[in-house]
Every structure is written in structure tokens, then in C-alpha cells.
Amino acid sequence: MKLFKLLCVAIVVPLTMLSSNLYAHPWSTPKGAVFTQTNDATNNEVLMYSRNGKGELTFAGAYSTGGLGTSGGLGNQGSLVLGPQNKLLFVANAGSNEISVMALAKRGLSLINKVNSGGDRPVSITVFQDMLYVLHAGSDSINGFTIADNGSLTPIEHSMRVLSSTGTAPAQIQFSPWGDVLAVTEKATNLIDIFSIDETGLPNEAVTNTSIGNTPFGFDFDRRGRLIVSEAAGGAADAGSMSSYQLLQDGILNPISAAIDTTETAACWAIVSPNGRYAYTTNAGSSSISGYRILHDGRLKLLDEDGVTAATGENTNPLDMAMSRNGRHLYAISPRTNSIVAFKVKRRGGLREIQTVEVPAERMNGLAGF
Image (cartoon, rainbow, N blue to C red; front, side, top):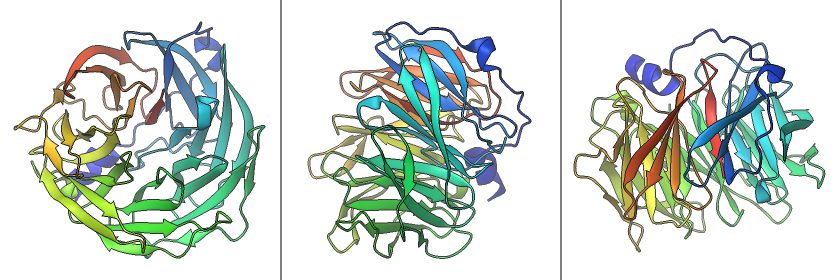
């Protein structure tokens, strides 16, 4: 367990405060952008990188969220997410229990709203149309907000729901593609919670499902609404895996592929390509990324027999990932080496490294992009 905490939560490292004025500059009509947050306990900031047509990143600025991070590992996925049409960026400030709303403009980001998150230690956010739900690791709970046209957030009354127990070490919350379900992974209990959403936007009580693999962590839905989950196996050597599930109407998850080995260590973060054909997980303990093909029936098949679709570099211990909106480029952060590694997605899902970018932060968390 100590090894797992080191790999998937990481070591607490003091953070040097970044100055927005020092780094900010126009980003001039990029093809897209990638965002991460510094998670700084004294001044949390979002770092923005513009993306050109080749997938290469250029630093575009550091923008204060007006909130605080923790300057430590959070063991989470989805601490910052983009809203519809990529016009708004929502950021969880785990140290000050706040959600920041930032607007994208031609010259970068601007803070337009900040609200109390409604719980203790927000670590993951998900958005569907005009609804936002946040996951709290400290209070083992979720609660919702409505999003106005101007980006302001209003709490949804009576939307708070608790997880299976206390001390669940939750990692992620995410809407299904149709917004009718919320899923949450609990690392400490090996459970996956499913909350159905009623017509008023309120979640029903959780239906708890036992994870097929040990330590369910990151996940994503494919285009058919199937749940693809990475399993860190408590950080055990070469024991990481991924599973796929069919979500039934009663909130029960029916396994399709059960814990398909990555052959790598600490499979923590997961992402599905925009076309729904491929799934990837970062192996924090092996400094690698494993890719899977998602077959038509939802079964998973490793792209590479040894589980290594790409290596991120010795001792990089990759964490969160993001993909470009066209699915041609994948990005992974390495807080240990203060870097983002960029890959081109090849024709059959393979990955080719194209760039490593230094990041002016020592404890970054989360990754979002378009």
C-alpha cells in the first residue's frame, strides 16, 4: 500500500508560486489547447498550452484560480474539465474547497466565477450540458450545480449524496454520454458507485458494484455508454489492468472484459479516444502507457503483447492524460519530472512521442484539452 500511495498519489513537494504576469502572453489562434493546474497551496493556477496542427505544445500562460490547492498528491482524475463547446474551464481547488470557473478567450483565460464546492476536498468534476457534479474525497460525497449561460454556478438543492462509507479514497466522478448516470470509483473499498439522474437533475441513491479488478481508479465511457476502468492493483508490481462493463438500467455493471492485464505497474489514469476505438491507461509505476482496442462488443484487447504502447521516459511516472478533440494526439503529465509528454496517435492506436514540454510547476494535477 505504501508503494501504491507513492506511485498513484505521489510525494508532497513544496510548490513555488507562479506569477501570471510573468508567464502570460497571447496564444494566437491555436488549433487547440491543453490545461493543467499547479495545485499550489498558496496560489492555485491553471497552466495553459496552445496546440498547433502537429500536436506540439507552446506555453501560453499561468492564470490564478483564486483558490488554493494542497501542494500534494490527490489520487484523482478529472480535477479540471472543459465545458460544452470548450468555452469554459472548471477547476477543483482541493485546498480551499472551491470550484473556479474560467472563460477561454483569444488571449488566454479569465476567472469569471468561484463558489464553495459544498464538501471537503473536491478532487474531480464532471459536466453535462448545464449540470456540474463534483466529487469530494474528504467528505466522501458528491453534489451538483447548474451552470448559467454566463458561467455562474448555482447549487442544486438536495443534490448531495454520500458514497458507500467514509474513507473510500474516491478517485473520479463522470457523467455517462447521455447525462442520465453518474459513476464514481472508490479505491479503498474496490467499489464503483452508480447514481442514476432523475428528470430534475437529482441523483438517486448509489448502487454499489464490486470492481472486477483491485483498486479501481480512472475511467471513461465509450461512445456506446460502456464503462472502461483502470485498476491499479494497490501498486503491486506488473499487476495493473483494465476492465470494461455494460451498464444496465438498474445501475448494475455487467463485466464484459474482466481485469485484462497491462503487465505493467499501477495502472491509474484512463481515457477513451473520441472515436471510441481505443482506451489508454498510464502506468505510474512502470513509466509507460498501455493501449487497448475496444472491440465492437466492448471487449478489450491489448494493442501490444508486452503492455507497452509507449514509454514516457525513465522515472517519469505518468499520471493524468488528455486527448485532442480530433483524437490524433495524446498528452500525459509527469509531476515527478515537471513535464508533459506529447504523442501522435498512429493509425491503429499506437503512440509515437513527438515532444516533451517542461512545466513551471512542481506538483501539477489534472489534464484537460481539446
